[in-house]
Image 1 (spheres, helix red, strand yellow):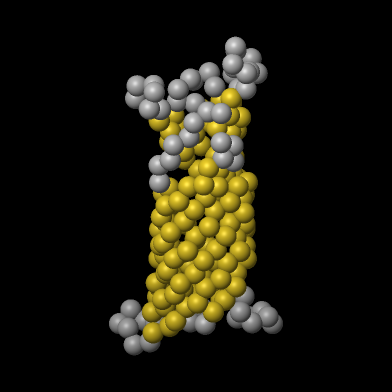
Image 2: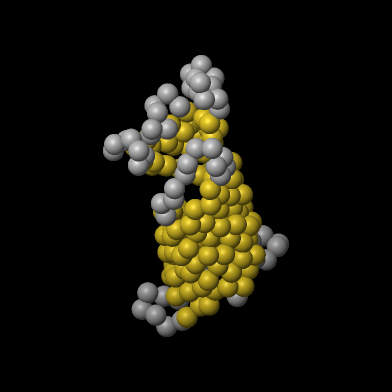
Length: 181
């Protein structure tokens, strides 16, 4: 059947940046924070598999979020700022096995996109001497994701169709050029 979903969770970001002008200069930034999810999809169940009932489906979701952390500039280690991932979208498919009539375990994968807010850079003294404030523009990045999870049906509740879902997703986004302005 088809479904609508909503939820919340926790996310983490590992951002690796390199500089084409500074020889082999790289920086790694980390961020973390909350995220929500709104989505929907459709699944189809096949019976008769030696593993048990198999479920395949397609889905899409949008995740508003506040995942933020300190950004370090690979070109100038004195520059720093706050980077913030504000939302992401996912579209893909999943396949899984019903372990029991109430418990589904699955793998998923597909395409993803994310929006990173502009990053205002400052130095330890509050500005860039002789230049003024610098910033990196906001970016939209696209890529792919894989994940796995479990869903459990709450059949004991008086409201039919409620599930507990937990999932881990790994996303990788394409490289993009980002220049000061």
